[in-house]
Image (cartoon, rainbow, N blue to C red; front, side):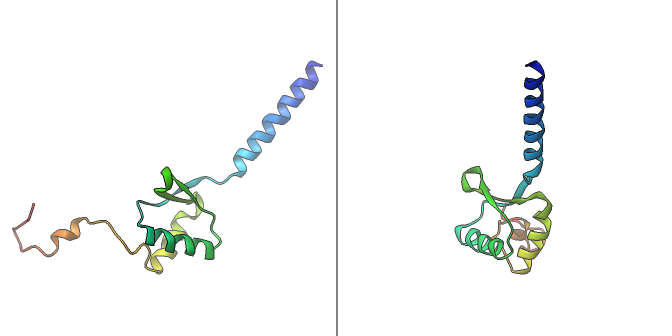
Amino acid sequence: MGLGVALAALVALVTGLWLWGATPDYRVLYSNLSDRDGGAIVDSLQQMNVPYKFAEGGGALMVPADQVHEVRLHLAGQGLPKGGTVGFELMENEKFGTSEF
């Protein structure tokens, strides 16, 4: 009786580990996308047959970890995402020695 329970526990453990290892690890592809960019990126992912899912209440788009860089390069080739965040490019048009900040 005890051997049967131990064998069943071992089979359950091995099956659980196998299922856990078989699921791909997802990483964030992009976060805080506009609705337009998100829709265009999802369309591209579907055309490329890349599985994806949403996280953080829909605020992050995730793809399998081993495909993140390849997908980003492919999407960049398509000009996606079109919207961007504002960074140091704000200072590119300032005259030397001046700043609005």
